[in-house]
Length: 290
Ligand SMILES: Cc1ncc(C[n+]2csc(CCOP(=O)(O)OP(=O)(O)O)c2C)c(N)n1
Image (cartoon, rainbow, N blue to C red):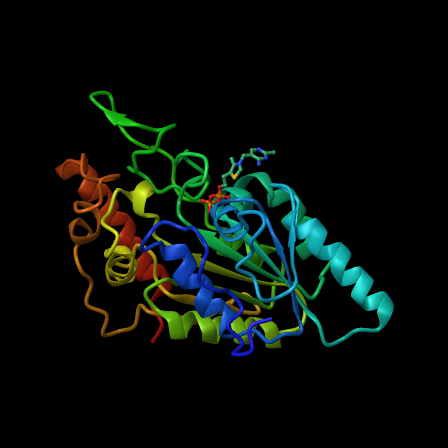
């Protein structure tokens, strides 16, 4: 165990500039040693546990792709049986593991009302296996299963609104943030852990190869996602919007600023940009907090 509470150590083999690993550091700052982590497979797991090494300074358990939340439920049940009220249980999953393959198990965990925090690292694709589209892939993104081309603008699906799905399960705390706002992430994780029952925190974590961006651009794009209102910082308590980066004085940046410098979006034409700008405008109306 690292003495300085550095629960994720150097030595992992994530891509240079990976948005996911810096977000994990911000999550870790909110944790203490009385924590157990269940991790769905994906980039985070694969890059931090190259046998025989591990970057984890906390008890951490591998699970298969779809069942990390069921593994967490089992850990929680064992802790309850032992009368351990102190140890926190957290699940980490990528967007594929969360929005798609693990979703049934997550829904069950939420339905049972277990006191477990689920953290989703949203790279907006199945990054680890070569950037396939997931339920979190946004409209217009080129992925290996939704390639852009003469006849295609890339993904024609809309990103699932998982925060609302979490709210529909009656969660007392659900929030979203991005890699560009480390203090916001730490604050939200702390709040989630203080809230009894299940909670959900989703973090947009730019993927260097998946988004076709430079190694020094993850934070910049994670910031632009918020400044364009395509991915606002949000917080729901008891289903009610209580925190939002979209305020009365919000001055939006045009979506082109975010989209056109990313390889996955650079094929988009004026009408597509107009459609996506409209989506950002709808977000502003939806998430404005006075
Ligand atoms: C049942 C099953 N299907 C497929 C895989 C292969 N697989 C491992 S990681 C991964 C992608 C994970 O994507 P995501 O959850 O979005 O996390 P990311 O890699 O983007 O962090 C896939 C498809 C698997 N391990 N198990």
